[in-house]
Length: 126
Length: 126
DNA sequence: CCCTTCACTTACCAAAAGGTAAGTACCGCA
DNA sequence: TGCGGTACTTACCTTTTGGTAAGTGAAGGG
Image 1 (cartoon, rainbow over the protein chains, first blue to last red):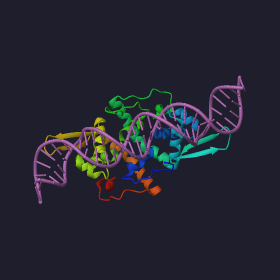
Image 2: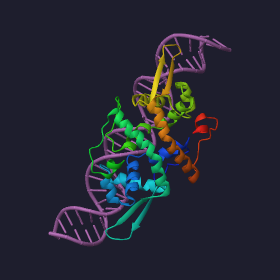
Image 3: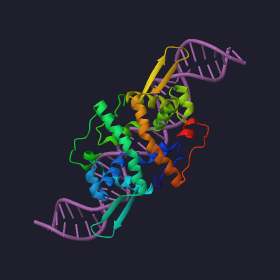
Image 4: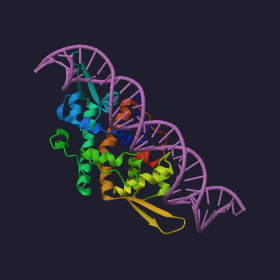
């Protein structure tokens, strides 16, 4: 658990991609970073309604290991840490677009619930 | 747990789509059905290396609830059950194609392991 | 006569994922 | 003096997910 176990063996590409996005908030983190370019820890926390600090750091660390995001620490006080997408992360985000389209169709089709949070950048644009 | 809990509320489309594909074998089931059109239970079992019967039925039932697949039972003995993709299932599969592309890139990039099973239709074509 | 095949179900267990709450250390503000 | 903000870590617990092994019941083959 300490060292990443997310490295196959995989059966196909879908497998290898899902392994990296599955996690309750990873899709949203990807989207937030895509929408804003650069985000700090607390900005991400505020953008993801209901995320715990533990889960957020855990996801961010894994995504860093998986080379989806960059993490830049500034030696200041109070601390400042910035997150951005890597090239692979940006490409993954693009690859997720059709899936997001399909998901929105599913929500319409089945009249599923959506969280009531219309001012969040995420729900407004995704 | 008896009745499907996979119905949000969702934050965005990615959310609603990932909810439906996450599950160890769902991507593969989708792909198998796409590749062959119609598949029986035992054919799927043989196509997914290592799947347990419990998980396979569980996944198939959920995918039926989520309207990704059709299930046709023939009143014969020995029993015969056929699975096919619904329109939504086929569309989901299409939406997963770019993700599969990205995943294959990731495998190449990071030189990750792939299961050694070159004769399986899944690994050969996905 | 027993073994296998078909498509499952059930009970039980282990591992993984995720949530809660607290602590850390330093700063600015009132 | 004490609160809130910065970015975390740690311990503990619950929920979810997946796996193992067995049972079902009728038919066809050796």
